[in-house]
Image 1 (tube, rainbow, N blue to C red):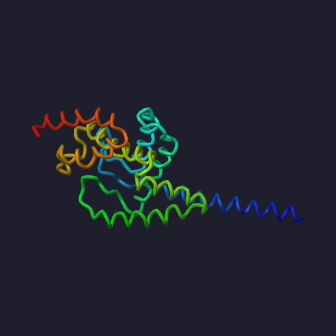
Image 2: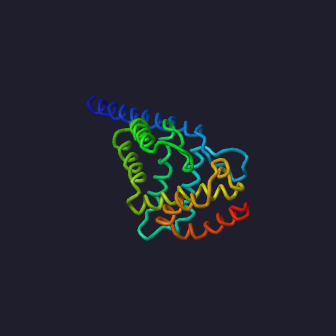
Length: 207
């Protein structure tokens, strides 16, 4: 009898854990409805934040050879899959848009509390720690993850004839100020590859 009760208790714990994990996974599905400023490469529509997260995780896997020594690509991929979940509550904040940075940071922190709080406690704390690490961008893994997060949008913009740049009246100087530093810090060869292409696009427009 005691063994049976013990088994029932374990079964309930597993069931409760799965309930919370599934609640988190179903909540994450809402990220598919958060539209971003960037267009798809074929310019058929805007990408959503879930697509963005998947795409930069694939960037990390594909461009792992660009990571500095000591970077753990599996942790980078985990960060990139998690980093934009807060946009379910906070929405997207386009890098070339106008927003209150302090207010947005507060909204995102509150969203992280709620969304990662859906998980079992230990797992929620682990995921939140990865999100915090990405936001702080101090560890080698987070610095590389941030570089890829900044690198992917201009790749799409160039593929879609400027993408969202004309919508926001973006200048080459703004890209150099807002995008280049983070890419250069984590993956300098990627900036060296894309910078001439950005310059050529603006030069072709006479800018």
